[in-house]
Length: 368
Image 1: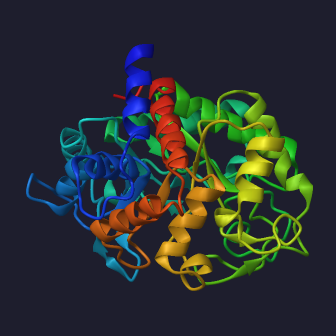
Image 2: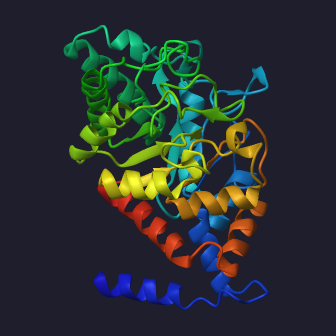
């Protein structure tokens, strides 16, 4: 195994990245880039002729993200309409991938749930409601949720939220009852129960939104969010404690700007936040996934080329393009990243590093 790994690394390091035309080496590199992508698509049923099937096979995509409805047309079904339909969709998605494929959703409970009772799924209460229950009931709720995800073919849940409910005027976290509270110990307690339930079903949980979104005033879906005057280090406490447990496989970045941590870039694009703080000071060695890079907090201020380059160089391992807020052509996306790697703007070492973390993620969680 070690010899195979060494050969793999050697082969990749010998890529001719200055070549002007597409070569076999470029095709290998495109697949490595593809492993760093989690993308959304618009179908509730797919076959071998579907665009997402081609993308999975061509680029060995790292993952997909599923939504129940279109963002701009809530009456129109996107990927989820019933338990039976979802099982068939996830089975098809996996059949097109030669490597483990992350099939992810935002299933927190309460208002943030893609698997809704209206479609035949069991309801899950919000984090705020759960925080008022005892541990026995909480375990029952999250064990049930994890089983539902497992039965649906979903292996990655963008939850739990570990943002502290610091700012009561916060609309996107506190206002939607997505936080377990303002006490970091309570947040850690309930988040750990959630994580354990997911782990028991071999589902990857994702802590979010680093380094903390609970003190913000605005919504990063809509535009620039500055938490410089409201954020405090106590918002790091849930991450510190949960990272120590050794059970954290993925952490999602927030598109918040905090001049105390980085005077130039929002967290998702910040080396100081994602590498120096999260990896260096907090000791995290798992996968870092971006929040949706089509949110206006970043997409309105940076070009696609700048977004992918800054995000990857900051330490983000997987880039999320939900294709809800806008539509990103995946072929174009891969070509943009490829050009940045070939020019040296994104070091090949970062791509290798992220691919290794993604591979270890699958091994740790026994994904097939």
